[in-house]
Image: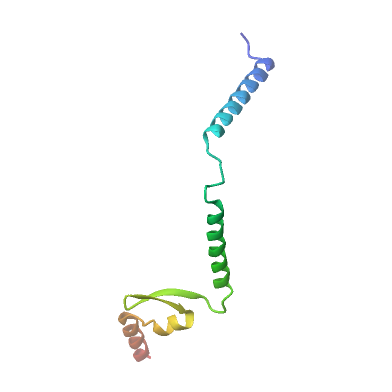
Length: 101
C-alpha cells in the first residue's frame, strides 16, 4: 500500500485528536481551584505584607538587619558602615601600601 496525501491527512487528524484527549485528561487531573477556606484572612495578611514592603521602599535610606552582640538590629546604611570594621588583613595591607610610597 502506497502512502499518499489522504493517509497524511488522516494521520494528522489522529495525532491531533490524541493530543487533545491527552490535554483534556491532564487538565482534569490538575487541581486549579484558586480559592481557599480562609481566602479573606489570607488576603488581609497579604495586604499588610504589601503595605510593609511599600513603606520600606518609600524610606529615604534603605534599612538592613544586622546581628550585633547576639541581637538583631535595624540599621540604616550610614549606621552600618560606621559599625563595620575592616578585617585585620585589610588594615595590614593598607598599612604596608602606605609605607611603600
